[in-house]
Image (cartoon, rainbow, N blue to C red):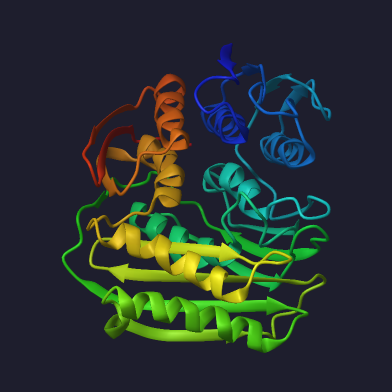
Length: 350
């Protein structure tokens, strides 16, 4: 049985999610202890419990210790996912994106296409919003051969949540290796500024602020689309913005969300500044995407490479964890303005 110390590295929920996902894929029993030991509220929280519960049910597994506050769980997976439709209600504004971070690699190993309907938060703090997954992460994963689609049915903002997302996933393994090198051309830059149950002018102000940053930094001539969305249904109030750049190597994104007392202009400015910071380095993967593609590099067949503007603790922990569990190997080179990660994957097949 694998033993994983949940306090290793950044010691957060990502380590737990990846450990359970990889154990389910490889059908290895795993015990994870010291779960989120470095956090102010250690142990399983509702959003983590839901991710683990979902994966265990998908692979018809057994689990011990699955309760709120638990710092140790043991999982024994039994099979590939076989259901055709699966529903998850995370409750309140628990992040749908983080649930998908854990479940998507497992769903790709299903024998037949699976539709997952998830209720929870679509735009919440400390988590990429659903539009980021739709327009940045998923298109990048498609280079590995990932076959999936994400439909936003209803927005859900913190703290009320109530959002809904439909995900369709198709059998995709074995994944192919891929490279995200320095880009040589920006094809287009797009902006999506949105509100839920708030005046449209807030979304418009967010977009104008983002455009002003891009203009100041010399990227405004690449703007292709500016989408103002106040029509998508929402059960809660909130705002958000995503700015993404399509390059000849990968897609780079920057996002920001509104909060009470935070001016719309600040929200738009933050998102644009995030993407500008990455584009100025020539990197084709932003730091949030890098955190998420490591597991796919480990599972793909052959050598993959990615260049980003920063090596986060999440990415470093993910590389170490994927190496331990799968046998994949990783190396990285850090410079002043960029980091290059190389991974030799195991060519996983269900």
